[in-house]
Length: 130
Image 1 (tube, one colour):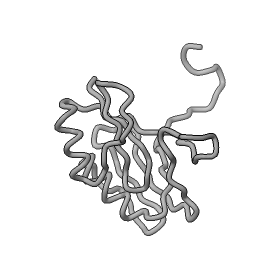
Image 2: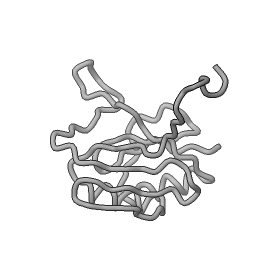
Image 3: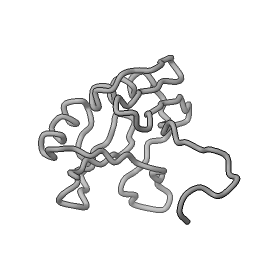
Image 4: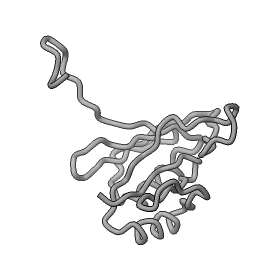
């Protein structure tokens, strides 16, 4: 299907929400990692604004957040619901930066041209060159 459906309301993706137990800590991590500005912040909700006008990254408290296991070893492991794909110019430098910000590289790296890291709340994210 190309374009919007006739008569459909206007829809625009504005945020991707990331659940965690500690919003201020995860906000601080992604602010260091991405260099984006904080649009709003409280103990339970925060938003980082993409300076290029793309989709913002939001964080909300999930009191019972369980970090995903990636890759899952069994069907009982907490499954990853989604992950962030972050395009970088220099994969080695970006990977070192992610580690310096507090996101260790995953033990499992499925591709040579992608680096999977894990944020402080346990969410995997991928760095890749475009």
